[in-house]
Image (tube, rainbow, N blue to C red; front, top):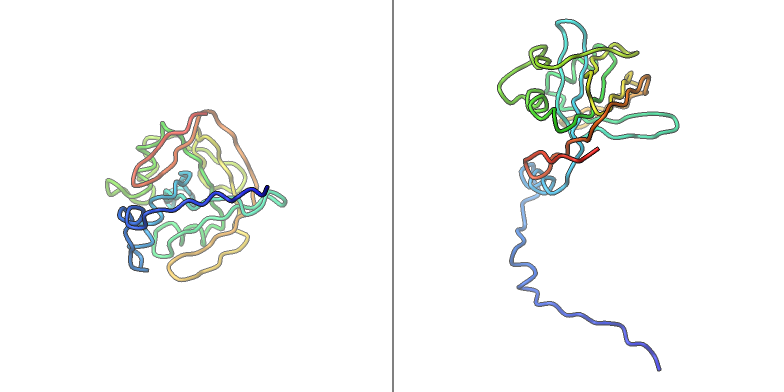
Length: 182
């Protein structure tokens, strides 16, 4: 006696009725990526009055041996030229208590440059990049290489310092923040 594979049929109209094909353009890609949750980090760079930063979901480990990070920064943003100039950046992994700060660094409310640092305590580790004192984690990097492609720079960072904090982290999905416990 041979086992028959289970065959399941679907009503194609029922399955695809809730799907919407999108054009292959920036808006279509943004709509698709809204379904992908991403960890929220604030990328910081610069010193003194020449500091800026951005909220991103594009920070990730390139490798753990050797310790390297990767972040994608818009070349037209205020952050990329400062990262390029100072040769450093910090990946500040933020938690649920940092939602307002994440919005500030995302440009909501119109704050720019050093004004984005308001309302939080900052320190430094090895590279000199600003480090959020109460971040869930902070990964301090020196720029190893930057690859400029299309609208973004893919920045590879050599990890020179790590600080682990307490608490959970934030994820951004479908236009809103979601808290992950810690």
